Image 1 (tube, helix red, strand yellow):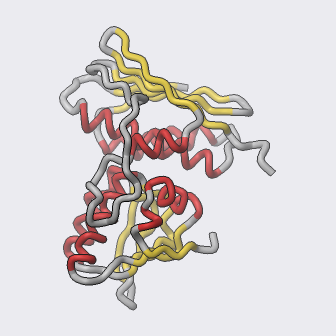
Image 2 (tube, chains in turn yellow, brown):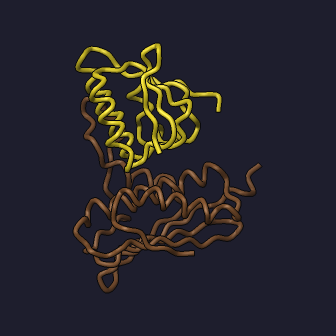
Length: 98
Length: 137
């Protein structure tokens, strides 16, 4: 399951699993939010290619608005997914300590 | 250990529970487990997405030894689509140039240790292996 919410400082906090079944939920949340700048992955355990698609749509939107997304607290497994897909080159990424 | 699942993205949750059950008594390195989960997610989702009107269930099976896990997905009523054939993905494109989607099979090929595709009597069978990593320091 995926939980997604806005934190007090404006960052978007995701937790659980961003798999193919949960992408519509994440997409709808981000669409309603507009242009977030920071996504916090501290409690996100898993992402699939469909989840990467959600992130790319958000990044394209942010860049059109003159900004870009920063993804923080990325675990090692998800960082591998970013690396294998080349997403480590198109997002500002900060790895977590877990 | 084998089970059949409805052709729906909603099956990913029971598939995860089935996978958890399988590995409850069989050790696997966390990185290898992530790969197994990802490959099943991507391959099963492709079967749902690109063979949406098939009335058949989709099979998922596991075999394991200390060194590797072997996972088999069976799409019982399907047209041939050999996922092992080269389909280059340009991962150097900028965010503006990037298409949405198309990374699933690329990730699977990058992360599993072997990948086979067979089609016989209308059934597509995908078999992948992943080293369990249990001898890693």
